[in-house]
Length: 390
Image 1 (tube, helix red, strand yellow):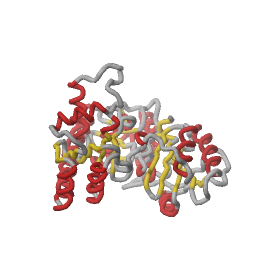
Image 2: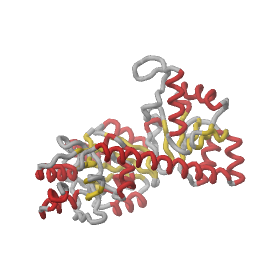
Image 3: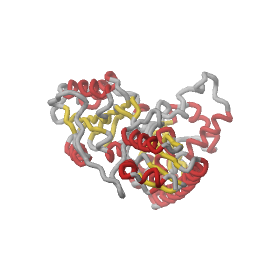
Image 4: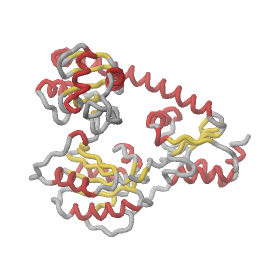
């Protein structure tokens, strides 16, 4: 997998010429090249199924994967669409579909993401396309590989590092009671609203789980699910942890709200939506405060000049970060960097903290100077060094 993060948008003082980057070398008749976010949105809305390849012009594996996409497009019904998008051009779409590396493939069916594949894996892409594009396909892939979509987050053993699908940890030894307790605390608090159920929102494995999930969905609130069938430790441990012997179990801000009967009663009297919204608001405020304190600590412990970037100065992971690093090197002034790719909390938190939605972000004495375009403008007119040394 070739690492990538989304490039800087033109906001505030930034200006950026929007141009379409062609797919990495190749002429295609069935694979559509998408020039902008609006075109992709329209394609998704008008097509029953869309297979989207998020790539980058500089990424060599993307060329081979586009060849594979073209071949696969020739094997399915014409009503299905295959599209290539440059992730550094279609920034909003890349953010929407949570693209953090190239190549990444997103299969959207009836407007909903049903599969996300990261990396140049032709075999996995082919299997996914056959499963979702062919109406007579009978095979069903492991649901644990499906990525969370829209308003639901699915925490499964095969997707989450902290959720193993066995009684052993990554070192092959049995999980201790203390380790399990820590994991249960994490799982019940990692999101404000979490439903521990049999199966997941798209495929519940019992009637009670289905009813509870539907009740939450009908409230129109964001919630996560955890499939207790995927992890026996969690399935048995949570019964003791919550002192509740059956499933599903709904947690709000780390506190057990109840099982299926209580969930349905709350849905009936209108309190389910109210309590979930209250939990989301409280959780969000606490997380924002916690993240802001971390950001302020990072700024306080760094040199006067701090660049929040994708990658490192020696190995920048996007063209915009690389350009800003070059501009700073020209000044000869020492500076620190922070790789936002290694810390998703900081990456997302910085957008709100600085009121600047993209990266890189250059700070001087704890104050934001700007993003790529502004830094390059200052470098060009000679004011960059003057600004960061005064």
